[in-house]
Length: 109
Length: 114
Image (cartoon, rainbow over all chains, first blue to last red; front, side, top):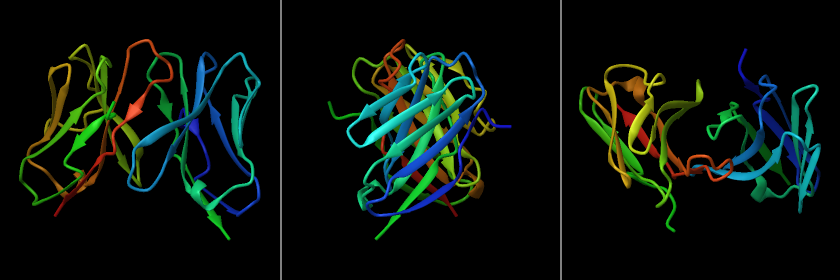
């Protein structure tokens, strides 16, 4: 299986919360990341969490880490149409992250 | 800083032609990475450089692909001869070695080989 797995699509209604899930295999990962890719653009770092943390909150974004289950999630509160993008989960032990395939978030009115 | 700069943004070429993609990393970043993104395979790491030296090119698909970094501010990815299956978006990224959250991507080059 792949090192970092995430579902390919998520569809939500504007104003609802979105939860994007990810599982990884490397238990020695030091950092876990969420990147966002808007159409026609490169990946942009959205947020990251150290492996010794359980949760990190940044405005509308909440990252939850379950290290025991190697599960990472990204919650976007009050999802807006501008949040429509591909979200990549990544894990890293060195400075080179390993990326998942990306989850396409579709926000509809 | 202008970020990681890639050129061209779009490239359409005929099968068999040589294609050269260009990348200028962020000043002060000493590691540079080339990725390929397709629907089928997702994001693939092709090669990366540290201090202008190629460190790992195991992701380069075939001998038709080559990459160089003649100095700290410029890198090229060359495909010769190009084939339709090379059609993809190619990204360059850079980071200061040892930093864990400064990974910065360029806007990519969309390559179409017809």
